[in-house]
Length: 337
Image 1: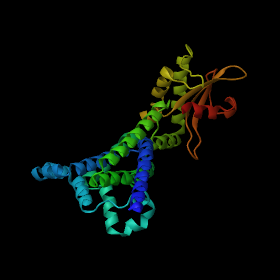
Image 2: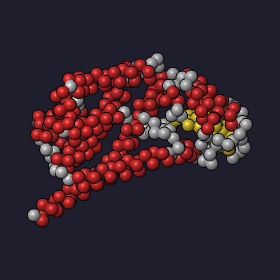
Image 3: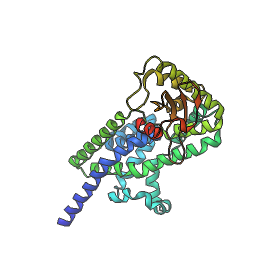
Image 4: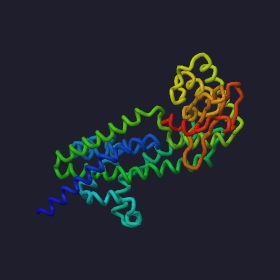
């Protein structure tokens, strides 16, 4: 009896820790990758599960409801017949890849979360087609789109397996066990976690740039370097024109905000897509030997160097690092955070 109580406490403590951490991480992942569809779908599945008899009754009375909730009703029916396994099974689910690849029951549970019915598959294809048509041509084609779409799909799968399965099966487990106090405590932990993540994002001076946008900026710049440089020069000139009358939009760390940045983004859209243009920053600094320098730049990530172009006080664009103040790139990175 004592051993059972200890296991119960440890199990709840593990779930509480997960609910305190996973939602926080999920907010940042959702900002980088388009996983909102998976979040909405699983949220509806949970609602149908909790509604239980009411949802099934609605589906029996309405063909439309039965069609729309088909996947969610399958989710509800599965867990009504198969209670969730121990919590650690779902925490370590990703490393059980060979197991759920070959065991039909484990594979069936995963597919319930992925929910790839004909309707959701068509929605996914439609979303990808729209993304390609609006954000890639004419400079980028299917060769560039393929890897980005694959990484996006993989990110959604990872989110579902690593974060959503432990969260959702915990709610299902505690709801079925009629443990409202424990469920309430976990939901409070999740709300606090989400609030902290939201506050952290709100404190950022720049919005988080999605993975797809970041990849497109680099690919489009490499596709037609001359046109990319022309847009960057136009952005620098537009911002410099605004800064000539006032330096009020320059922060203490050199970051440029306000109207100069808006005009720079507008000039960049001559070549870049709007979300790509908005991913660029402006940085201004005085030089020790006199004069100043204005830089339009896109922050580096991993193995890729920053995309940048500078303009001295004489108005000549330059890509010579020696004409920048010492530590300029470090200062730009810090200013963007």
